[in-house]
Image 1 (cartoon, rainbow, N blue to C red):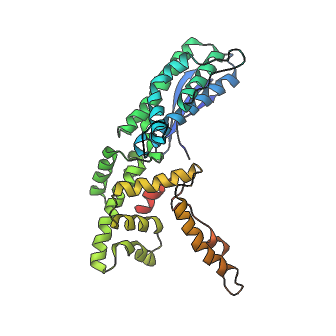
Image 2: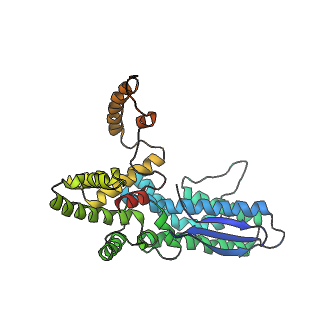
Image 3: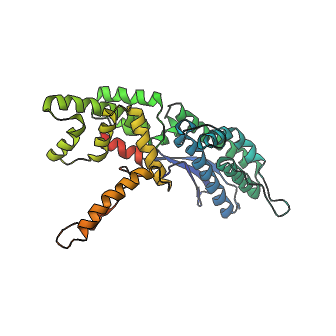
Length: 326
């Protein structure tokens, strides 16, 4: 589920508000008050288009070009790069939006630029020059928050990035998470309020592998099975940590393991099937279960026959993985 700055109208005070999450609760700020007599429907349209713009802007953060396989023209990475570069076009689109002309209207291919055009058209409908300047400033504030998050600075409004799942991990954020683990190997609460969850999961995967190797040496178990053995002592989520350990033991880096799992779950959430070959293997396993299930002498719960397209919660994969690793 995408989380972004949401804009709303207080009908009693006739004010435009912005709200965003922090990992510890939501914050809000007053953007501006509207003149008396301003149409409420027009105000709601403005708030809705501002939320759309925030959604489009933060998607460039959660889906960076660096996480795509190629930057060749017309590739997914190229499209992401073009969308990120569109930040520079937002102000002009707000002040000079495409308007209907001759029964037609130009619509931008860029979700970000088109959302800015919609903001501009909403402002034209309201017809208040001072409001336009206020909205321009607010738009710049929101885009600046995305830029800060890209640099690993999750302060101010950029703190909402702690609620997002990102296909890549900032080295600055990974280093900050590692420092927290050095102070508290079980993960301090600040890990969920100050650190991007994908970056925090990368650091957690590294520490989990170290803990598994130490435990394996002391117990005689294989490092990849220690979480399963621990589950026999006390119930805990073992599927994704065990998978992470297996991939790490096979030689993959913590960064590649975590971002790969998070990216896979994000694609599933977007309605894509990122690994058809793996799904075919699941279907092969399911055939055997179905044969047993149809046997009247076997007692199998129908829920056990379901296929999981990802071991993570596709609505919040990065935080889900982080919680499981901890």
